[in-house]
Image (tube, one colour):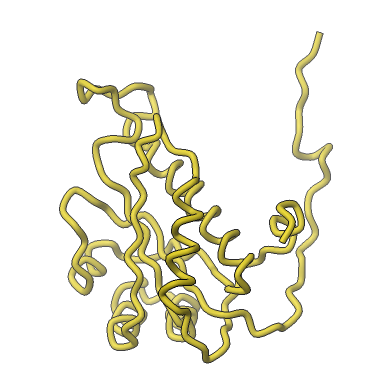
Length: 183
């Protein structure tokens, strides 16, 4: 798939076919996502892929802050990807001090780039995704073992697209989005 076409056509997908995502395909997506830029190439983003329906249902029922849409999305997904960040690297100098006034918030920036890269790679494979941001990371950590010194930054629900036409919402014009400062 051409890059610009993929970017323009990728939508948040909340309904999926009843078809498992093979591990090899998920590994290919994660391998592509590993090329996402990160702070000083720290590569702090990690992926926990949950394919166990019982665990996914527990997360849907207990870990999404009682938000009904997220419960429905996770219950429909074939895989739930828990995106984590390794703490204490992104945004830091080698001596452990903050490198900028953004302090440790750079890991969220790295996570955003990695999530979008993951979603674009998935789109290329015919897999729909939606990034889920409303969840309780502490309750999730009671359900899924999160490695020490990592924190959950996002969920990505994934599954093969149903083929339903995705409506592309109106986009703001370039004039609304850009300000140029010139001579």
